Image (cartoon, rainbow, N blue to C red; front, top):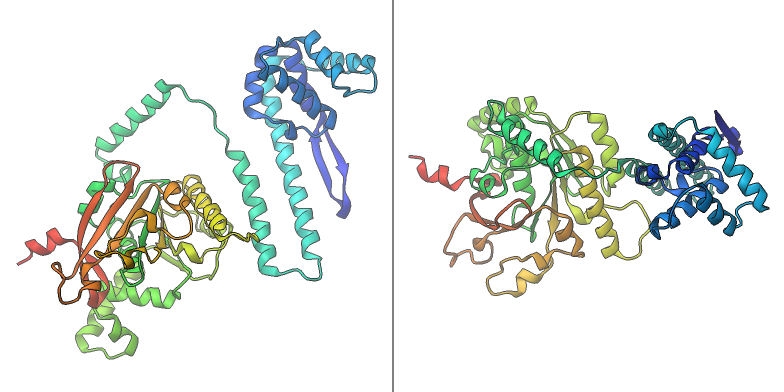
Length: 450
């Protein structure tokens, strides 16, 4: 039986009295089912305050390893003065034990309770959003961000998982290995970045990974991310979503065209193009037009907004964000370090929830400028150590000839330092750098070309 509590705006808070009573009654008649209940429910999932307090008594007894049966639970409930009289407590708990048909169905009762709980949270969140919107000084952007954050937090709460026996995990791993070694292995292994030397170290772009590309300004991190997007979309024929908080969609398209058509970016910006340039641009445009690349240049976008847009895409295989320090948490947080920590944590959650690799670009502090070799380090990540903590892979880009244009031993060479790799080894991967087309290349291929 579903019951409702009246609210303002004609709304009602739904709850299921019989489901709540049946969960508590199931524990009273069969306390051995309590661990399974505790795995799924918390006291706030109950609507009635009395039920919340009875459940808290049970949790406390369980934590203290006290014997749980009808008599001991009744005694503990009496001690907490949950009911007006001890007789009221006895009558109510007796009714709870009688109302439940069988403790075997407790999982179904828990599920009914959770459905009502999330409905209540959505209704209350909606009411808070309405009240905030009615305030005279309401800021629409802040309201949207706050609204998305509330819904995001409710959705996060639905993702609880339970223990998995090691044999189950091994069986799943074995099945994955079979897929990876089968005829369709390309569907299951990490997507290629388009740079074989890098793929060998990081095993490609794997689902649910948060990958950080960090560098000082001018090192080509945006170009590197766009080159990867281009490779994934055109060669692997996957769907890529790019959020650019710094450059416009048109600027990104120009860079993609420059790289794909081998036409200098300066020529594209000035319009000084030769006949051959136009031919190459036309061919490159056909290739890119067929590629599933989606661009979004919303400034100061929040993770909630990103998720909403990605869900509307329905299918996405890779997400790229340029760049971290321009993102907003959507909440008023005075401490920027704390805000960045929250953003990186939620980026990792987003990668897991969408089950896709998420590449995020990040600025580095001025640390490399003060060192003689100018090489970046993990400690140079700006504003928060949680960036390094939350990322599965950290790639640090560095070009020696950027600092020593004449004396550099390696000209047009970029070092991609795999400084953190949750899947294996770390080390430096050398790539070619073509400044004319803002393009990173494979050195092994370039050296084998005639």
